[in-house]
Image (cartoon, rainbow, N blue to C red; front, side, top):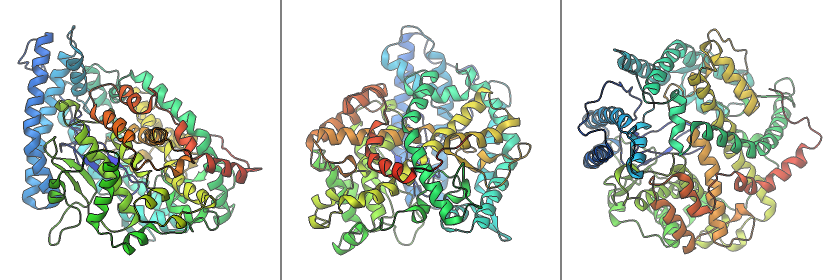
Length: 632
């Protein structure tokens, strides 16, 4: 089960609750709750309050930040109440502030695009204008009626997805139930039916509207100064869109051999389970056999491919928590203790007074895990319905990573109250969650030293981890590769579906269980992030960055064992270096932030490869003599 934290870009004025379904529930980081700016931007001539001069541009930025800072405090509280006490009234309050932020985001992005053209801007003014200008997901041109049409289409696409259903044996299956069934059903005919009906019921009605939306949004992006909408999305990484694409491909090239080894092994095991007639031991893997509607995470079929005895690691974390009488609040306290052991300050007592740690009785709430900073200073809170189990123990370590990030950068101006790029916030929580190792459990007195699993258990542990983190990589890569092609015109409406299938075959080595028809099918629409217009590259980057951060922390701590066994618990030098990076927020280009902690300015997948090196060596042994790979 893939669990992420959705990165909230304050500069992008994105909703705190940007909950986007990956493979099950995701957490959120909610620093300053604001609505998603998928509303179209009408690029009408802006009524500028300040002259188009360097001084005027700085005055404009200062006014925007002051207004947002004041509004965000009360808006955050409205969103918090709505999330923790759901009623018609709190829905209306949240919608009220959402409308305000949407309208202001549209206005300010339009004006920022004009001020950004002024020569002689100082560093901070230019950076903040670019943050505002590039904060939008969809932009509409000045053509009369374009903004309304774009908004109507995006709303319709979201609704089509939300109402989507699959079918099985003559019965309709709601989307969430269909996703769950894909993870537990082992009947290949029924899996194919679930896959086909979901993709066709949800995707097919979207195709024409999606094409029209792309056309309008591209016009708007060009009026903002971008070549197309994809270029606008890639502009938020302190490099040109072309440089970002090159980095993206380089990172994939570093992990592709590891993925290919995993693919070969899993394909062979699935072939043994289902038989050659269902899943051949060569070529593509049937997408519906991997335990996930989109074949993006394979953890649900671990039991089908795991080596004998791999699940026997000598202890059960849930049992350890229960036997030690750890309560939900105790899980929070233990997680906080990880951060304070690094020399970071304890959370304020108000955190425990105001957080939703367990599900309250007698009212509806959002249980989706999220981390909040309501006043942009130290009103830090967590929103979870915590249960005493291993999953929530790891999730809590992850979520508090967002709270500590939020507090570290709380001295930054408003538009810098965010991670260094949209992959950083997610990666911070993830790399801390990687630290929940057996050695760490010994350090916090949950596990007896003699119960630490021996090295012969590592393959099962690493394979289980790889079934999500490694298996996800090509899917994380291709979603936006498809969209960038759609936006730049290299993928046309006539080839929308075949291009999607081709990319999944090329990068994932998976193929649909039934034939597809370019004239009617629109399989991309069956993935929420496509009709929801949620950029996806952040998830791929976060998967790379989390291991890079983890490796750096282990090196700073002087860890000498296998990387996947590393615990840097209690190392204050790690904490000092980490806090220095987090405190930068979005004030500097992300390579500056990366260098401050890792010593390098380049994202690299080498630490991920080192982490999984024992597994990859084992996979190569198991794959010896097999016909690995596939021809796209």
